[in-house]
Amino acid sequence: IRFGDQDDTNVGLLTYDHTTNSMQFRTADAEQMRIDSSGRLLKGTTSAITLANNPNTQIVGTSASDSSLALIRQTTGGGEFVFAAGASGSNISNGNGLGFIKFMGYHTNGYDEYARIQAYADGTTGDGDAPGRIEFKTTADGSSSPSNAMVINSSQDVLFYGTIRNDNVSSALNISGGNGADSSANIILNGSGGSPANATQFRTGSTERMRIDSSGNVGIGTTSPQRRLHQHVSSSGQN
Image 1 (spheres, rainbow, N blue to C red):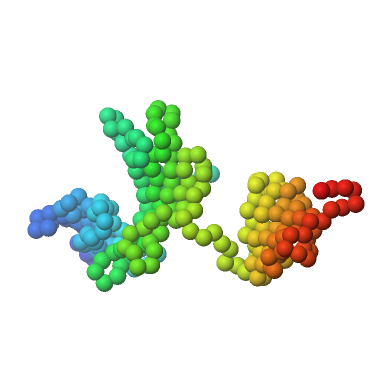
Image 2 (cartoon, rainbow, N blue to C red):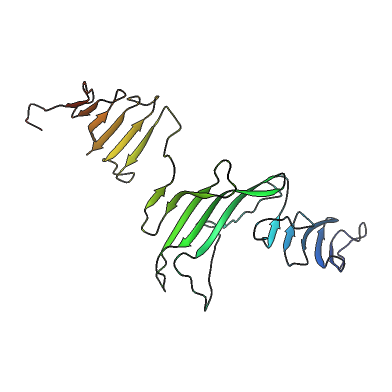
């Protein structure tokens, strides 16, 4: 089917190629999209790229402008990307996967997986009962498949499988027991550029109660411990 004009009869064209059993869509006298013989939708390529699970839709390009996907909702709330699993007669149960995002990169012989975000059912499921777990995975150096780096389970426990650290030496890692408006109970881990440097502070009621300084001295009721364990007792009789 041609959608041409007096200057170019092929400027717009819808073609079925019986040799490759593919449907091709052309605009501005160039192929923009095709559906191949396997039913895959290909944008920016005439042949599917081999990837894990053979995705049914591929957008291929060489820059952000021709290899990106945007979901835009021009009202408040924003766009939505939905992953769903199961169907009538095929209910989801504990441990079943719900959807995942893979991050892959090409090297010599094909695409390897470097990281993944994956969601699972995490407990007994039922109508109106949907316990979920989300896993953040990374692939270790020398490995070919990702493993758990962080998991948030259906009890909202956060499980870490590596070191938690703040790589900015001029700031501290602050572990708080409250929300943004109430963070009066916290543990502050200071690096070499923190204040105080290389020290750990324990606070309750927005007041420091104990400190381990850079020398390993522990101070209770004092911010300047002079011995391995230094407890300061005030004149009011506090113990």
